[in-house]
Image (cartoon, rainbow, N blue to C red; front, side):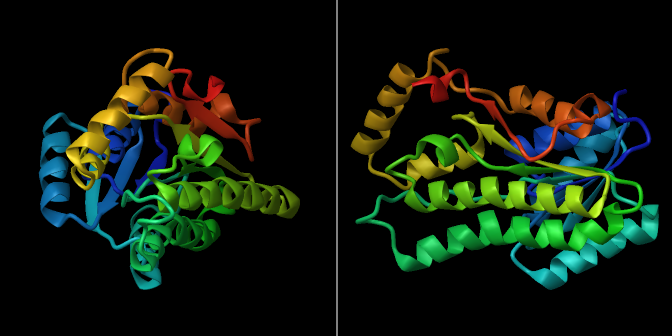
Length: 256
């Protein structure tokens, strides 16, 4: 119960890593508000988690819309009066290299993966200033190593990495007791990764998977639960002197 009596907000929480984060934060004692654009999936997840006596609440949320952020933050403020943990997790992958990636795909990826983190930090900050807390922004190993088949995704996640550092420095300079860090998962078994593979040809997908197994020292993809432990650490008081940094959870991939 490392997060007992904490109030958390997780975006993209209806499936994949976001759902794993929501579950783990609640297991550790937090009251978790989780959001997603997928209402059906979110309601189903809410029912499942509440069935395990976990204190969670779902809200529909388009993370690219400022008005949606204001509505969700106001919901948390009106119910709880504070926010201790924000996990900016919502994201998409639209595969494509520099020759294949359309402008529309590039813009959409930056909207969902980077604009959303900007909006989340900006709208949540007033609610977190007084009591402090932890902002965890989901970046990626591709922000450190790059990936030719995920040009827009890599660019967006690199932006998240440095946006996090800028917000961390701002909070420290202002004396706000808010820590801001980026989390960099490697290749994780999630619906996001599976969906991305469906957008490339079978030959390209097989080549990519073969390359990954050669380059990941652990010789396997990670699981969402393995990343959730890192979220709990950054959210907890165990990380009270950790801000402006990146935490990598990648099975050794970045060692290359």
